[in-house]
Length: 133
Ligand SMILES: [Zn+2]
Image 1 (cartoon, rainbow, N blue to C red):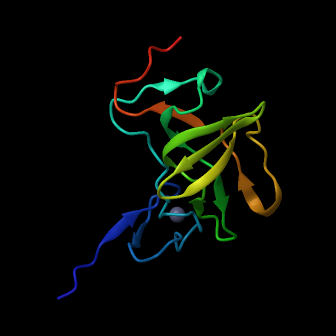
Image 2: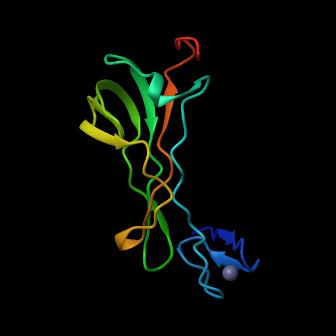
């Protein structure tokens, strides 16, 4: 027998069937995509201190807000090796994702297509980071 599960709308407080993405009453996005999070025991690093060859965990929190109002995280996040440093960000390589450029200076801009950019953050992998300077 199917068990009904409910999610409480954080906006208006009514209970919605957990299969719904939006609140049936107010249209608030009940199901939110989980924001990417850094690994445990990692330390936030200043990207300007990075050096070529460093292995870091990069979190890109760019979010696309669908017409239904549901935020979908679309940035690449994960373990990367720094390949190149530029004035505006880094080129990094990941075995899962391949090469990616992370713009570190352009943030908080609401651009075309409802994409919201947040500051891309760099974390150490584990706690074996170089001492933060
Ligand atoms: Zn609601």
